[in-house]
Image 1 (tube, rainbow, N blue to C red):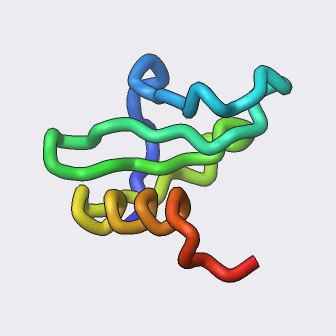
Image 2 (cartoon, helix red, strand yellow):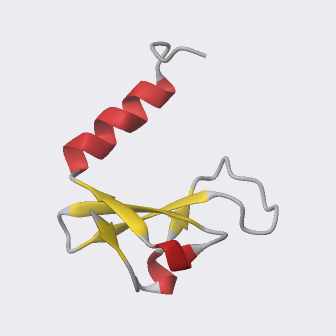
Length: 69
C-alpha cells in the first residue's frame, strides 16, 4: 500500500544515514499499527506502508548475514 501526505515532522532516519542533502530512506509510524517507508529526496511519490511484523523481518534480514550480495 502507498500513502501520500504524511506529516513532515514525523519522519525519522537512521543514525547511520549521512547528512548528504536528504538522500536517505526515512520511516514513520502510521496509525499506530503500520510503518511508512519513504524516500527523503522525493516525498511526492508517497511512502510504502508495511505491517510491523513485515518491517521487522526486513530489518532483521538486512542486519543479518543472510542476504546475498
